[in-house]
Image 1 (cartoon, one colour):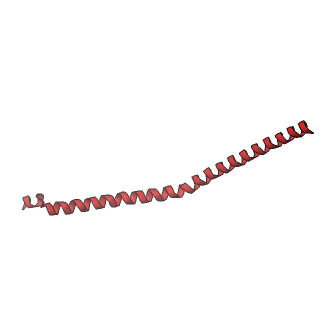
Image 2: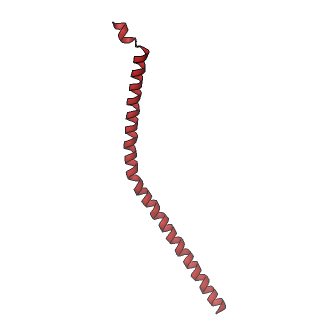
Image 3: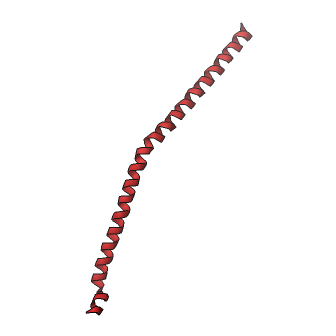
Length: 81
């Protein structure tokens, strides 16, 4: 009786292995789902910050070139009257 308990048939071994692997993958997928939820909640904040920085850069660039254009116009007016 004791030998039968320790000795497994291939089918029984395969069945248990499949069950163990499916439980393992289930746990891993749950872990990643939870991680994804946490990550996804934090992503819009970072996207918003990046977008804000890009907007500021664009505004600064536009202001810089506006300043340069007005300087060039003033210089041209002085030169050509």
